[in-house]
Length: 121
Length: 110
Image (cartoon, rainbow over all chains, first blue to last red; front, side):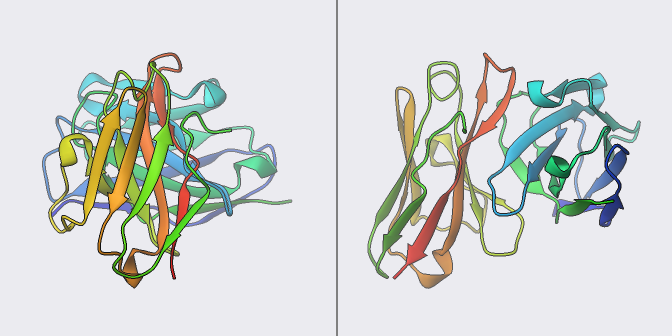
């Protein structure tokens, strides 16, 4: 079955950048998109953006444009998200979620375990 | 403030049926599919059900969805203690050009 595994927890200083990774296995992902969704402590889910590997296309929530870059490698099984200019408001668990269709409205079928990002001086 | 509006909490006794609503607009639920996710305590969200009651394997038929215009609902029948957690609706919004979530609803099984 499909599994999504994310990189480990990060501790970053305010103003710095963080890069997170996720890897999908157990299927073929030529018709998939990798999304990043974050959840601040005690809060709900917030979509950050996605990459469609077969199109090499990144799409981002308005709130994060200019500050986030989401990429996939040529194998189309690994994605990364880089977020710059970190503030305390970026402290959250970041989830990688795989859409099993290229359509922007497709469901988030598979989720990673989450990566905790702490922002602290 | 979330684009999709859900009640903060619902509750029900074991065996009962509860419904969680999700209100949106013509740029999201009114035009695109809606998906529901379950997040149990201290775990990652998981896909629960989509439009047309499309459920991943392993999700019981006690979970069902309906949609009308710009609103949708998730119904959970035969409530079990293991259903306790947080539920989110999600759709795509053409005005924002991105996915949007509801604020989440905490389900308590009494």
